[in-house]
Image 1 (cartoon, one colour):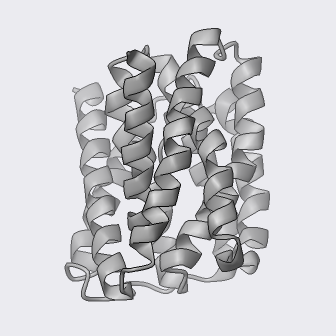
Image 2 (cartoon, helix red, strand yellow):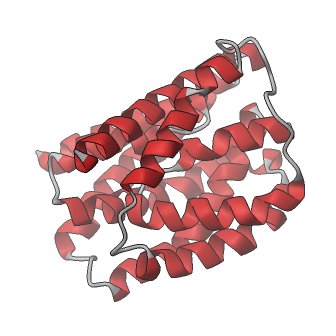
Length: 244
C-alpha cells in the first residue's frame, strides 16, 4: 500500500510539475517524509526523478535549449559531486529560508503572472547557478523550482523550460545516485520507494504534456509563479521549524 501511495504521489506531483515548470519534487518532500526517515527523503526523490526524467526528455526532446545545457551542466555536475560530501554535515536551514523567501517574492516579481521577466539573466551565470542548485539538491532532494526565475528571465519558457530542466536534472542524477551509494544511503527500501515514485512520475509526464500543449504562455507563467510561491512557502516553513 505504501508503494502504491508513493506511485500516486509521483503521478500527481510530476503531472503538476510538467504544467508548472517544476515544483513536483517539492510537493513530494512532505509526502515522502510520512513514509521514510529524514536522511532517505532526498535519495528517494532523486531516484524517482532519475527514473521519471527519461520519459520527459523523450516527450520534449526537440524543445531542449542546448546552449543553456552546455553552460549549466559543468557547474551542476561539479556541485552534485561535492554536494553530498561537503554539505552533508552543514546547516542549510538559513540557505533554504533565503531561497524560500526568494521564491515567494516571485508573486510580486512577475506581477501575479502578468509580467514575463523581472531581471536580466546571462548565459555565463548558468555554471555558478548549476553548481549551487545541484549541491543543494543533492542534500535536500528538491530545489528545481529555484531554477525557474533564472530560466524564465533568460527567455526559456513553457516546453523549452520543462525540456531543458529535465535533461539537466537527469544528467546531475548520474552523479547524485552514486554519491548516495557511497554514503550508504541506498538501501533496498530506499530503492523500492524511489522506484515507486519514479513509475508514477513516468506516467505523470505523459498526462502533463497533454495539458501543457493546450496552455498559452501567459497561463504557463501563472502556473509557474504559483508553483514557485508554493515551493517557497514549504521551504520557509521547513527551515523556520528547524531553526526554531
